[in-house]
Length: 335
Ligand code: KG4
Ligand code: ZN
Image (cartoon, rainbow, N blue to C red; front, side, top):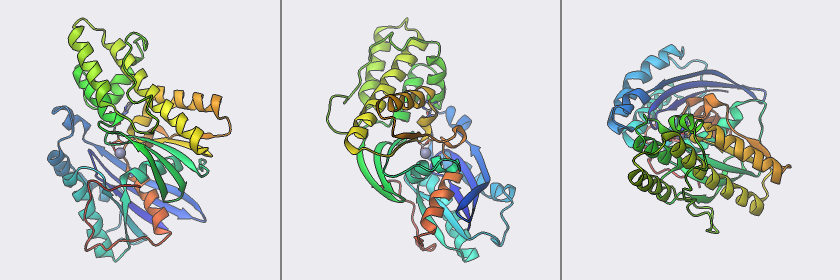
């Protein structure tokens, strides 16, 4: 089965083709056009601007990817239907609907978060065993999910306010660093002392698996106003240490309760080296029987390959939607 993937939920336009034969699949195309530079001027993603850019890039990218105009050789279309920014999502959703309808091919509505989970499987040698504990950290979401099987999710906890990536972006902005802030913070943190400032670890003591990053962000804001002579690298390193500590501690605690066979770290923030390494090391020390998985760096951020793969898994179960009626859902939930 060859499946076309379309992703436009935020500020990356992406088109991918995945082909599965005899249980093995190949990423034949994964084209990406990032708008990060455009949104950097505004300090964050502007939904209408994102939508306009998706509309500009989507068709040329289909052509560049060599997608035949009659859809020949393509068995299904998979598109991100949510969650995300409505104007941005709609460009991809309408494109997916149009192609599926015109080609008379089945359409799969993919949850963007499920795409991030499946980004790990894009490395063909990695096949996480179930149950899998998933820490999903992106610009819009921070969730701990128990994946019991393909397409089976139980939400264990989530952020009550800001997502982890959002906190990285906002702290970077306070420090005068550019958007997206995550990579900037981690770069500056390399030169700083993670113990220089004792930022709080919000909700670490609470028994649930929820997170809160707004309090940590506010603590950084207060520190900056009280210390105009601050060292950017130390603030970045200390903030990053607090964020990583919270994420890792809660994940390990969930591992004790749910005894998973594997742990999956995914989403844009999974590119963070400190987070990847700390989680891997602490899991190895405390739970050597649990296998740790994180996506290849090229698949940590938004991309259509992960959407095509998540779509492929659903297409195999004939979970299709009507191309005439699919509507983008900004609040689509995984569980
Ligand atoms: O998954 P993603 O590409 O888009 C959403 O679905 O939101 O995640 C984007 C987020 C941004 O907040 C960005 O700052 C963050 O991922 N990010 C990072 C790093 N690289 C990207 N956060 C921390 N450290 C990084 N190295
Ligand atoms: Zn994402």
